[in-house]
Amino acid sequence: MERFTISLHDDLATDFDQLIETIGYENRSEAVRDLIRQALEKSRQASAQSLHSIGVVSYVYNHHEKVMADRLIGVQHDHHDLVISSMHTHLDHDNCLEAVFLRGRTEEVRHFAGHLTAMSGIRHGAVNLISANQDSRKHSHDGHQTHTHLKPKN
Image 1 (cartoon, rainbow, N blue to C red):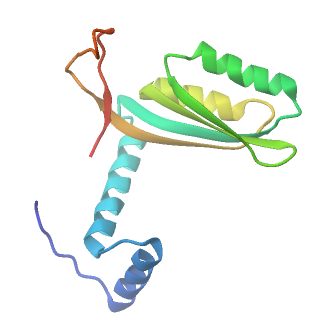
Image 2: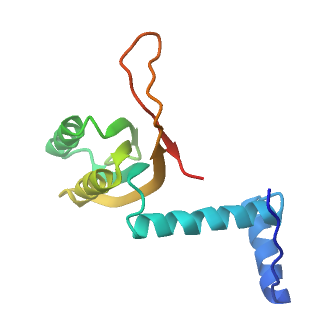
């Protein structure tokens, strides 16, 4: 593990210590590591350096619009190669929240997530992508089809 030292003005250090206490970090090092990971990930996603991604797209919609639920299920089936799983929860008498977990080539995942959140009837859509490396080792589980895995980048 490599160590480095940073200098902060007293006010900035105090504000940072209050922030990490509020969030629940055990120490400054963990907080700084997470800030660095977030900055690196933001850079990878912004510069299209990430060939593969895993992620989640979440959205709220009115479940009384029956056609909406059918359309959402339809587009997820149409993109079964990207969709790992989905979760559906009822927020109140009218609104549902869904989270769709995705993996694949970044541009395809991003395009599909954007398509979902842009659908008519979707409210409060959000996308969170994490860059991933494709494991070069192909293997199988209990004799099933050979495949590879996507692993989050450090």
